[in-house]
Every structure is written in C-alpha cells, then in structure tokens.
Amino acid sequence: MEIIIQQTIKKINRGLFIALEGLDKSGKSTQAKLLSQKLNAKKVSFPDRTTQLGLIISDYLRGNKNMSDEVIHLLFSANRWEQHTSILKQLQNGTNIVSDRYAYSGVAFSAAKGLPIEWCKAPDAGLIQPDITFYLTAPIEELSKRGDYGKEIYENSSFQYKQENFYKIDALKSVDEIQAEILNHISEKLDNTSLLQQKKLWKQVL
Ligand code: Z5A
Ligand code: MG
Picture (cartoon, rainbow, N blue to C red):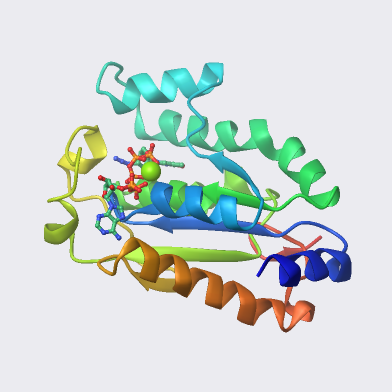
C-alpha cells in the first residue's frame, strides 16, 4: 500500500486528501487514526478544538454555551478555514491528509436543524475538496450502545446525516475489516489517477 501511495503522490504531484464522515460514534476517529498511520498521513480533526474558535465550539458542544444555529454553523466553517492554508500547503508538499470529519458534517448537522442546505453550504465553498470521503453508517440503536454516546448535545437529539454519495461503509463491521475496506477503496481509486483532480467545494475544479 505504501508503495502505491508513494507512486501516486509522484503521479499526481501532491498528497491525497481523505475524509472520514458518518454517524456519531460510527468509528471515524478510530479509523482516521489507523489510516493516518498506514498512509503516513497528517491527521486533522474537525472541530479542531485546539484553536480559540475550537474552544468556543467545544463549550457549545458540552452544553455550556447557548448559540443560535446560524452562529454555531459559521463557527464550525470558520474552524475549517483556519486550517485551509495549512492543508493546501501540505498537500502541495506531498503530505497525505486524513480528516476526521469535514464540511459534510457541517452541512448535514445544520440542515437537519432546518437551515436551508444552500445557506449551509455557502461558507464552506472554496475549501479544498477531499479526494475520497468515507461515510460510516449503521442503525443508530446499535451505535448508541458505544462508549460515551449521549455526552454531547447533538447526540441527545435526532440529528443525523440524511444523504451523501460517498463510499458508504458498514460501521458494524470490525475495526480491522473497516480499515481493510477503506484501504481497498483507496487502492482502487489510485488505479485511475485521472479521477484525482484537485477540486474545491462544492466540486469545482481548482
Ligand atoms: N459537528 C457539526 O455540527 N458541524 C461541523 O461542521 C462539525 C461537527 C465538523 C462533535 O464532533 C460534534 O460536532 C458532532 C458533529 C458536530 N456531533 N455530535 N455529537 P466530534 O467529531 O468531536 O465527535 P466525537 O466525540 O469524536 O464523536 P464521534 O466523532 O461521533 O465518534 P467517532 O469518531 O465516529 O467514533 P470513535 O470515537 O472512533 O468510536 C466510538 C466508540 O466506538 C469507541 O468506544 C470505539 O472504541 C468504538 N468503536 C470504534 N469502531 C468500532 C467498531 N468497528 N466496532 C465496535 N466498536 C467500535
Ligand atoms: Mg470522533
């Protein structure tokens, strides 16, 4: 796998950008960590709770701060923009990036609260688009049995993804099975590097 990745970076002349999205507690962070090790990639996470904006978001998620749906949506987006130049530079330098959640999380959560989809998409327009996005999904009743479920405010409600056409992955498989499936998809995608044109959200060629 490593050799394929290195050859690809040479062919496309940049790093690969992979995003993990999906339902709460579907195993995104578990897979992002493993994948970043396998691909020798830099892992980024959204929300990035280490920045000033990230700290405000974190307070909100813990239920310590009231904010309108619009304001928190814009903060989540701004939190991605904070990392944008760094992500772009690293990709250009040939570093692979694995993102634990990204813009699709933002749109899905806020649209599910009733904000118009186009309004939700607008602040993320122009962010670099992941080359491949994996969407981990399973019945919520099963995921709610997992550790820490219900600790943050969104998990106490019925907000969940509605749709997206990424690679759907069954989150009830074992950690190793999921990782193997993800690597297989990446490998398949790398066989046709013409599909790896760098784009901006939402699907605009750079
Ligand atoms: N949010 C938003 O509204 N707008 C935005 O723009 C963004 C986010 C970016 C916090 O995100 C919230 O912010 C989130 C969306 C919203 N909503 N909520 N709540 P977060 O990413 O910080 O959330 P988190 O606390 O990391 O939870 P998570 O991401 O939903 O979990 P996960 O990463 O998918 O799962 P995990 O941590 O890898 O695993 C969960 C547990 O399951 C753990 O005990 C694992 O050991 C176990 N696990 C993992 N994989 C498996 C398998 N395959 N089998 C069995 N058990 C497993
Ligand atoms: Mg996570």
